[in-house]
Image 1 (tube, protein in one colour):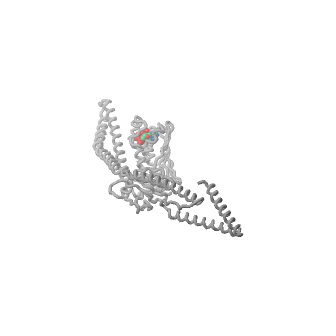
Image 2 (cartoon, rainbow, N blue to C red):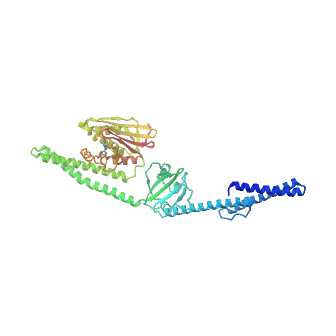
Length: 438
Ligand code: ADP
């Protein structure tokens, strides 16, 4: 009923009571007493209705109780509240049904889903998540997930999950099993965790790396023998004058290809090791100036007659925490690439600098450059922009994949910017925790 009609009812009733009081008072020659009694009676009646309303609201609580019977405006008030209450309880039931259906469908998933509030407390999880992470409903509800699943990698990921790849952790329940966790942030800092058992994929991945490592290892010995014989043959051919030129050419081609295969096997072995082993826990302090100076000297030798201008810009006391051999391998791949993909006389700059966000190693050249469409896939194994050009330069197609893995093991990342004919710039970023203060 509209508010105006309730007001009309109330005013109408008050006027009626006043009229009755006035009439009775007039007959009894006590007009004011009559009016006073009429008003007092009306106030008492209104109070009684108010108490009935409060009593009903208190009793109703969660259950649906019929409102008390009343007439006039109070009856309308009771009915209006009852209608609103009914509407709300119908909406609540609908919502509860939707939530129940969502929970039923997510419970049927094989992947775990966990909802964590802005403070890291567990809000809700499905059956699979409970099994994968050993969470118990309702005992664990509200507890911080990181207290129940004690894993530093997960704690770090939950602290900062923005723009980060999913992580893999050892299962806290089943030994030897691997879980992949991906976090999506929603609402006011709440997190949705997707937990997946990737043990099988992980097993296949291990089998693949083991296979590549074993094959490379097995090929290394026969290849060393072949290279040795080719070298001996080459020396013999050089000394003899009556060898046909075609034989000479064939021999030098065989030596070239054997060398390339050896480089390929070394790179494959290094990549398998980088993938298969955990990074060293205690890192060494790697002074950058001597490391980069050595690489620049080797690059100058590689450049040879091409006479590239290779410049090094690095402070004497710059150093990072890491594995020296791995860092050498990554940085030398970048500098040698710059030499191989820059025409004779080109300029190459190797520069190290630091700021409040960490340290940066840049290798910049003014060589052939790369079309930006290739850049996202450049660090994939055997991805080449131009196969024939890469083969001419003697590349293995694994250089940038090695760089990426080394940086990952040092909590770093690589940024590539390049355009055809205007050179390339590769920047390796190391976080502040990896920088040794000078
Ligand atoms: P490759 O052994 O073939 O050089 P990499 O993994 O080192 O393999 O590099 C992948 C591809 O990226 C190369 O084939 C080449 O096309 C391109 N590339 C790498 N560095 C440079 C560079 N400095 N300038 C131009 N192209 C480059």
